Image: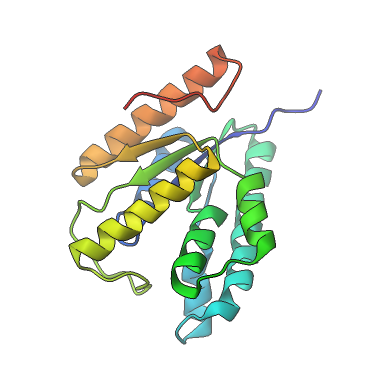
Length: 196
């Protein structure tokens, strides 16, 4: 009998909201494999500003990382996978900065939609991480957050917004994952809304 696909949680949102730290902490807490945000590795390798020609290689690297995490879940018998962003994030940034997204990236983002998105609010201090895509002022951060929310809503994703202190974020995220997994086991549709 084929093992069911693991429940996929995506930690997403605008820059410097604690996505990578939270994804790593949740993976450790739940004993789940996780995929890292590939653009970090890509920027380190490129050593130059990103442009529209980078969207597709970034997307391919992100997909490869996600597949590796899912393979790790299958080999360990894990029912959960955590993603530090996904292709939907690549599509959001591509549209925002280059006014275009390759069709296959947009399609793959929809086809590989996670089961639960933890959308991190930009209500924590800005800490530069070397990948500056956004600007650190509050208006720009809010605008980018709204773009993420709109893209997730448009895709029909199950979204829980995570806000507050770093400790609050971890607590809210863990509770949202537990509730979503429990709801999935009791409901026929994994995309039912969760109340926040």
